Image 1: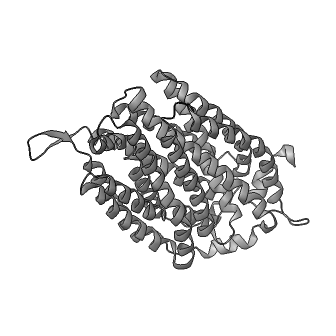
Image 2: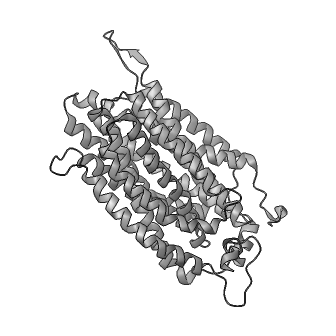
Image 3: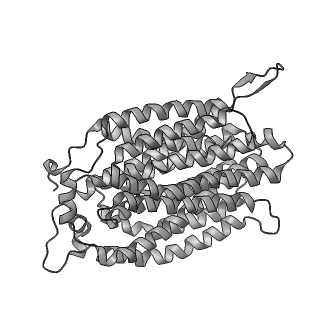
Amino acid sequence: MIDARAEPQFSAPALAAMLLAVSTVSAGYGIVLPILPLMLQVIDGPNAAVEISRHTGLLTGLHALALFLFAPVWGRLSDQYGRRIILCIGLFGFGASLLLATLKLSIGLLYVERFVTGVFAAGITPVASAVIADQGGSDEWRARRIAWVSMAAISGFLLGPMLSGFLATLSKATSSGESVRSYELPFLVIAGVALIAATTVHLFVPNKATEVSASAERKRPSSSSGSTQTLLPLRAISFLVAAGVGVFEVGLALRGNQELGMAPAQVAMMFAACSLVMFVVQAVVFLPRVKPAWTRWLFAPALGVMALSLLLVPRMTGFAPLLATVAAVAASAGILSPVLTYWTSLESGNTKGAGLGKQAAVVSLGQALGSVAGGSLYTIAALPAAPFVVTAILLAGAAVSGFGLSRHLKDDHAPPSGVAPREGSCVSAATPNSER
């Protein structure tokens, strides 16, 4: 049993403020996906299918590239100057950059907005995860709340496409009296929410790690000997999963709009279903009865399911089969995301901001390359479904290596000879009766 009195005194308002911050930046990304091809149609014309596909992939990838470049920077700054100030700067900058898309609908401003928004969004999710990892208490306590951060990101991604799918159906009158879609409203709404989130973070979130956290880190068995051997495979898997998600997102948006003739609301429904499945599976991964250390055995099966599902996405033509395949991709990615973050936080020692920032950077690079590949290669007739096939093969290979990583993580976190694991630690919680 874990002594509840040993759990950190982390206030509910502080946790709610962080979850709101993460959900907001995720919604700011999600609002673009259903309407981006339609916005590009206004700029390039409805017959410019190749240009629309290319810009959809590049714009989505540019946002993820900004996350890759700046997540480690924000993580290191949060280690030096505190978590709260970085979260506030990120949220204020994120909200302001969203307003760029409301000034004028042009390809140049869209590229600027996607990059600058990504720069400031990079300082939110890894720093929020570092706030949780800073706290003392049991591994179960931290694992569940890291999962909640991931679930907050999913909830924002769920809200974003739904919000843009609805608001984009509203019309506005132009100076000539014509009625056109209002693409600015989703950006304005999320910018306002970002301002509210920044205020709540400033009021409630602690700026530095607790003293309990430092004590807990000193008690944790050292993993320095295995950090390189475990962090590199963890980041490699994170990269491949993110690349698969990037290919999947862009490919689904383009396939829905160009091949299957779906309306924006239908595409938004597909993304909403994807997010809902991810939300549910992440809630299950770290249930109180699930020992965090057991989650290392989920790497291989989740990677295998994701690989197979990506192969099936471009072959599904009916709405129901495609929705089922989307759910399978979402379930596997939803399982892997919090589990990878949790194990990375364990391996990062006292520099959790930098460690989780690098993790976010790797994820963003994978998503950027996956998004660019999904858009740029989508219309090549000689290579049908090439991004899906290549990514699926790489994920299948990662699934095979995932078994070895799972065994190594168990050995890496075993206590030194003669040292008993502390109650509630990863080691004591990880060892079921069959392994003792």
